[in-house]
Length: 293
Ligand SMILES: NC(=O)c1ccc[n+]([C@@H]2O[C@H](COP(=O)([O-])OP(=O)(O)OC[C@H]3O[C@@H](n4cnc5c(N)ncnc54)[C@H](OP(=O)(O)O)[C@@H]3O)[C@@H](O)[C@H]2O)c1
Image 1 (cartoon, helix red, strand yellow):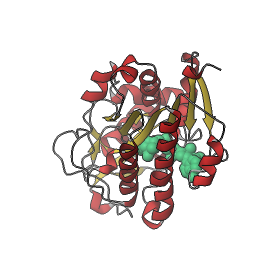
Image 2 (spheres, protein in one colour; image 1 turned 120 degrees about the vertical axis):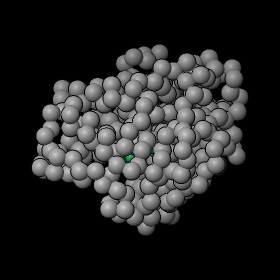
Image 3 (cartoon, rainbow, N blue to C red; image 1 turned 120 degrees about the horizontal axis):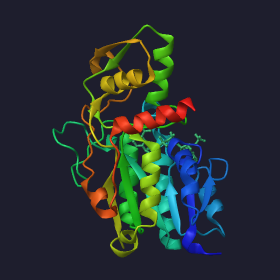
């Protein structure tokens, strides 16, 4: 078996996992293995150890996470098992196997009080359990220091699973009026673009040449919007006539606090891996086209 091409994707049922699968035909030289919770339950170190017994990969991509941001406030232990303990174990295994470890994190590691796009080295200060457990996972990986990278991303949507775009399409078609927050700004990330970026990075010479140590990067689409702008654009591009009302965060209480400002500076990832990142509206159009076909 040619181990140069063996890539494990953990979290095959999630948005990013399914997006990688959707584009895999463009990367025929990779030997991709997808696993789900049934194959390997990240809440259990025993389950992780069992899965990796007698299995070896050249690249391990962890697309799985505890992502229920509000529920995490009352399920901190479970979120910690998946976002920290499991990530630590995966990083240890990657290091033992000399595999490249690619892990995903979030803009929620920041407090959202910045006025300029967050750089990788900026001070973290998560405002909720989800962000804290993701940060703990990042720190565990950095301590173990396998070869590879963490990519922090934001506002992920796709044709798959539950996300803002699909929720807006559903509600916009059902209702005459909808209230959406306008005082949180960030950049949406189309999971298909992120999937392409990851598979590009996997075969980029920089990964082998420059990165003997673990590195942190930021990735989202280009541009900026509020959730209100995002919803407005979804409706415009889909011909939905539902009236949108801008509201403030304080008028839409949630269990977990959200950052007001989520913009990520993507200069490092673009420069290191020669990535051209699409503008968020262009990617949204592509996702809507795919949803209609
Ligand atoms: N979604 C966003 O807006 C967003 C924003 C910033 C960063 N991120 C990060 O980006 C990455 C990908 O996010 P996503 O939106 O693709 O996530 P997602 O759609 O919520 O998928 C999460 C995946 O994790 C799996 N998972 C959860 N608990 C598990 C367990 N105990 N054992 C094994 N698998 C488990 C889920 O499996 P089941 O289907 O079985 O539940 C699912 O495949 C994550 O690291 C996330 O933290 C996401």
